[in-house]
Image (cartoon, rainbow, N blue to C red; front, top):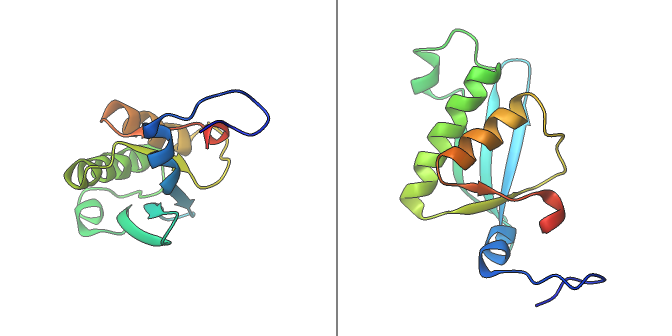
Length: 118
């Protein structure tokens, strides 16, 4: 299919990634990453710094290091399920903790598409 307005072609990977949305939530104490199916609104992957594997080893669970660790856990779980690409649910600024999450996911085999490619 073609994009509306422009003559770009959406590949199969992009269209499947459009169905898998990455939800990035941060607070002063925790970071939560979720992958949701856009069609069914079902959250089928999740990683958060509230889990025991983070609470035992990290004193601070809301910094860039914790964001990278949560993304690493999410990428391992995505590999088990077979998810190879996701699209952001919102237009986040590519900076700070979100940058660490995106870089870690891309390094570990989960491609994060730019929001304008949806």
